[in-house]
Image (cartoon, rainbow, N blue to C red):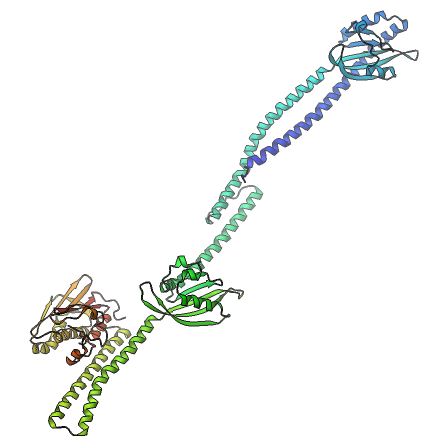
Length: 599
Ligand code: ADP
């Protein structure tokens, strides 16, 4: 519906009221004016009749009717009044305007009838004789108690009508003028009313659009002023409430988004109320598009959907727990521990369910690693122990000649060395982990050349036995922030492998240099190389490409795991490049600055 402007509410009512008042006054004054004028005319006509009455009576007493007409003409001319004398039978004997001979019988004229009844007759009508509207006043002329004739005076009454018309036109003109003036006044008044109302409207629109800070100007009118004040108070309260709600909401969001645990809240009818970043990452769903949608549409995991349904059926204060497996966006398998409980409002009514998701994948993996590790260690220890056990039993039986006894004892010694090596390596690994976890490594800025040379010296004998030359390419100015003892140990392991897995007469080269943000130590060999499929797993504990060969060479399968742990404790990483038949490059990457290493 189209709404009218303020002006159109004011203007028509003003015009109607003014017109009604004007019309009322006009009608009342016109009728008063008319009756006053007619009264005056009637009294005037009566007075004029009385002035000539006596003379007419005297003519009638004489029985001489002839001079009456000329008397009427003379007096009528002077007084500008029509004077007519009518006998009781209606015969006109004198008239100031016409010849009585030519006039009709007047006995049926209403004023004459009244006068002949002995009363003053008054009538207003159109005169057939004069063709004008006249007022007639007729008086009976009584001689000897008998009505001898009727004296009638009359005047035209058009002047009254004219005066009334003039008044009417004046009123219409004044009315039109008033309409225009009222229009102008209405414009001014409506502006005066509508301007503050318009400002209030604009203010209310600003409030509706959320701009609650800018206050409304308070108009001087009492009602509008109170309205503006009330709206300002309302806006302030609204602003306060919105600020509080927004603050609470952002605090809640901040808490939820900082949580490592995933949190999902759903309504009783299974619509997602809220879902934090951690949950969205675990479930691989977009947070914004999932919120407000049915869980079946947003969370595609059937175990999760079932768990939510089960949680919604719980009683107050009850909780359930379950472990499910999810596949992340990067297709990694995630183990998620779920806790579910019902959500209630302040009145204690159930309004939905709350699920907390804990990613226990790392824990599971560690558990698996630990389990594998125990199995591996047991296995590694069992092989030499079984062997030792067998030879010891044979020796105890006593049927062994000196040569065999010596050979058996030699084998037992080798296995004992092997056990010793494994235990040594395990202890080193454990020490690195414990040091790094507890108080961090003791680091110092060290020149690399002496550290590498020390490592080369340790491996020199084995290299010489195989006629392998060890070269070093390192600038004296190459420094790194390291624990020299551990880095030396790592380099020893790498050189040892390079020598172990290279044929006689080959070369081993150690290159150490600085690049960008890191210091690299790379051990190049010309050995047998490693197949690509093994490269990712080489640094795992007890991982060996060829177990038998490694054992034969005195390997424990822990050398590269120790390298990796030493480097990780320096906040660095390890890499390997290898090609079957051409050799391998094992590299250690150390950060140039190490903040809080080992943690
Ligand atoms: P191991 O005691 O068996 O040498 P490591 O952890 O040091 O254990 O090495 C793991 C495996 O990686 C070895 O068994 C071997 O198969 C392979 N490997 C390590 N270094 C080299 C190398 N330089 N060339 C070829 N293979 C190597």
